[in-house]
Image (tube, rainbow, N blue to C red; front, side, top):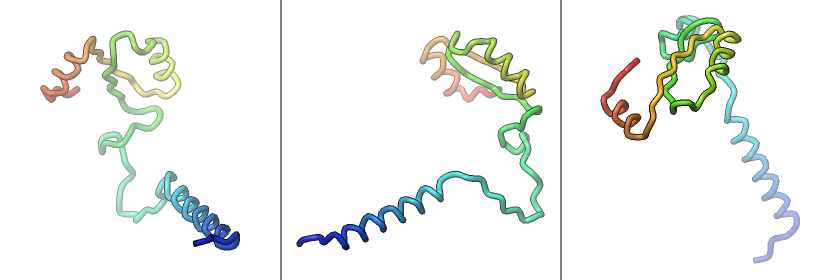
Length: 101
């Protein structure tokens, strides 16, 4: 079965259109509101907005420069609470215990 140039062009155009549709579906924020729902807050599980809230960070020991955390807090007003672990075993034990905070 031989594909002609016209048919090839149709396939390429269809593929480009499908790709454009897929990419347009990725990203962006929904702007639809029904007026009945209140705006999301940090208490509802949303990431806090600038100037409010707390971020709990669990990371390797000495992995993040404390000066970088200070700069983040200064620029955003969001407090960062850093908790660290020194090994994978420590991380796993804490996650399996279900510890919060």
